[in-house]
Image (cartoon, rainbow, N blue to C red; front, side):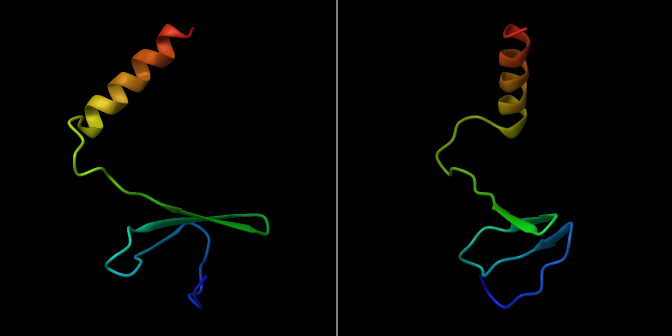
Length: 60
């Protein structure tokens, strides 16, 4: 990890070649989550959320 100081619930921007990072500190553990999106995907974020909700409902 770099020498950046990370605080709880802080969003940092990584170098241009990397995706932004979401940082969450829980107790003494710091979680860094980087997100990325496929450039070839045919499904929008809205479509994906709807699909996930439908799948969740079907499991009930």
